[in-house]
Length: 281
Image: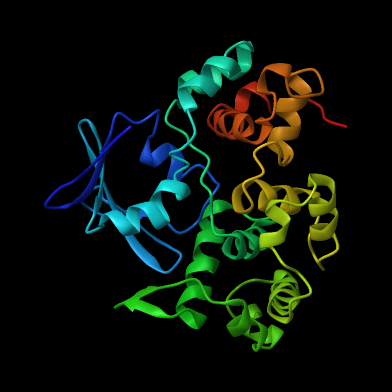
């Protein structure tokens, strides 16, 4: 990977597999969208990101070296060799097809608190509706960065709101879950950062104790928010995929079942006819 400062910002070339649409619109995050010029815009850790596709890479518009190193390098998982991972995954026929279909997917390393709340919102929901709820939550309770652009609200800010405030945003039954989660984090009874290094089973068990957090949400938080690449969230599509794989992820994924899952999940969403009739237990 090559990183250089340009008049427009920080340009990254020679990247090991990165497609902005495949990565930012594949169901793992909910605050990115392209504008009329094809520039992807989103907010990460209070920074308003604008990313432009180039012929030979991407440019983080307006970014400097400090912002790139502090935010974007880790967020896009630039320290991991995705070409090597895809080569390993391709030992399995279905995974090879998934990697060939969307070779530019990367699993983002999101801010733990934001991932925690957004995946609570995600349960029994579709991506368009999740994005709408998240944007309303940010507009209502987040700090304004630029006109009409808001940071994700803090745990303190959400903890002080009554459940009804979240219900008014369209959160439905999830309003109570958001309120409980915010209070746990704000009061310090739940330390999300500590779960990044805790034994995986202990980290998962702790998340499952949070009101409204089930196995799928816990696994999504572990993978997307806490960087636990070995954890494989399983919604109805992934359950069908795993059934088609013989009941378990193939051995070629080793400690990266979560990353392999993202390729498979995106593949299943785009080719539902291959999996819709598969029975799951």
